[in-house]
Image (cartoon, rainbow over all chains, first blue to last red):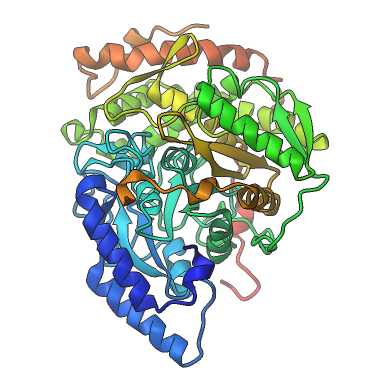
Length: 457
Length: 64
């Protein structure tokens, strides 16, 4: 069931089912840090009463959702997955939470995540490992791992994530869901615990592309409380019933994106490219700028800014997980000159990347080069090389945060081991519409989004 | 220009424990190898990609 189909059901029924699913699966998945049963049921009854009096707030009216525990929720503990913030109870809602509330959504819980959103495993030392619904021995990805698991397990229709170096798209890829990282400035960051002021983005993980468009519609728009928030007009994101991609120029990178990639992932991504061509899109071979170097720029910015953001926590080393502490220590070794040069290089790469749009309307790439690794696995073998799990998982997504471009991930089929793989559609600044149109067309032409994880059988 | 990470780390307070040092430094050597050549190609006049949003500090007409 998607959001449009759910609209015909009572919110109380949907919310009760969501709560039951979340509670039943949480011992296996640990997707939720907190389940808000009482407030969710009260809210669902309110939404049904409003509906009965003819007051419909929009497509999210009465729909059960969750948000990552990085979003401030008034009166509800917001930990950011950290022991240090274990008792943090905000006195305000994040802008995204406000907008979802205004749209009529029903918040049923807050999802687990990598500590401080600083990592991709969601193997949290303080709150336990979040597990992948497709194989509970595997990571769900991260840092929005609980959001990916909760959506893949069909506990909620949408769960909000944040994405600094792939933290929406990686769990979407590993869990077989849709995820959109919008253009920088499209969604307010007010009330979200920051990791990196240059690279943080907020976006939804959903079951379908159209659901992602509906959710982005609800949360997009200018917010004066966030200085990075854009005044760019918010268009209608939701694709038509039969979206056409005839003549759409899809850039297919000839370099970087298919190096050191799992063969099943490559097979599935190439099949999606062929589907796009069958739908009338024009495939344009392109050579992209040096993405490895762009990733290095992103890492220097992230190491520097994250350590600056968390500098007041550094005297509590014993309360920080080993992997996050390593990254924070690495940030302490960055120089101011490195950071400023990384920001200068960001401008250079933005200029170089912009030239691509003369040849293509969007790019189509894999989201991750590999399916979800196992919990505790530190390296993955890709081609003839062993690669660090974090660096492999972020290799194809991190640079897009540096550039501020929108990127949509959607499932493209399973590997022979039964794990999801994913394509990433990368767009021009503020052109999420094209990504949703192409994503919906691909989704309509395939059935990957209908695959259900074993945990539901 | 290359960096001696161990020397830089030794100057930090609080200390990075000796047992953690390799875990911190080894990935930085790989990062350095990718990052430093990029710095070398920066044109002198290229400004950083962050800006101070002075406009945001100007009150709207209604004084907000």
